[in-house]
Image (cartoon, rainbow, N blue to C red; front, side, top):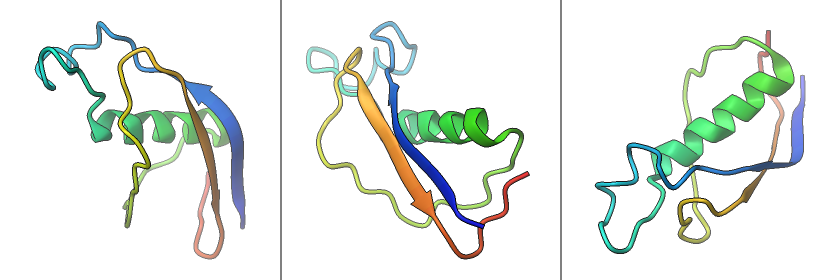
Length: 82
């Protein structure tokens, strides 16, 4: 099965509890929150599922709180959804 998500816009609020301690005076969204938003996007698109592993993640630029970002992904091969 192939899974494709293209162009879903997400955003992490500036008042999220994890933001306060992630570089006071120069806040950045922690990578784990970005990954969590990607997982939420997959769940919204494909329904209940369980994340087993994330083998690699690459962040192309820092993300500031409140800044929108786009989720696009494709997965093929051993993809089990549902």
